[in-house]
Image (cartoon, rainbow, N blue to C red; front, top):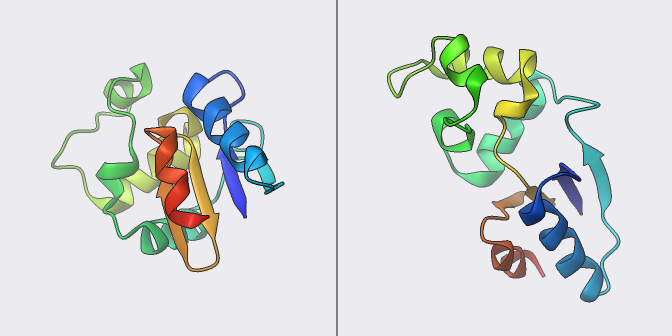
Length: 112
C-alpha cells in the first residue's frame, strides 16, 4: 500500500496510524517533498474513480492564485497540482488498482 501523506495534516496522520494499527506498513509518499507528476495523478484518478476537481483542495490559496474553478479542465487542474502539490487532497491511500481518500480516516478500512 502507498499513502500520499502530509505529516502536518491530522487526518493524514490518523489514516497512517489506522493502517499501522491493522498491521500495514505502507510506503509513505510525502507528496509535498516529492510531488506526483501528471501521469501519476491520472493513475490516481483512475484508481479513485473520481474527476480531477474531486481531488482538489479548493480552500487553499493556490486554488485562487492558479485561477481554478469548478469549470477548470482536468488538464488545468492536474497542471496546477503538479506545480502546487498542496492542492492535492490528502491523504490518498492506494492498494493495487484501488484507492481511497482518507477523509474521514475510516475510509481506509475499504482497502484493508
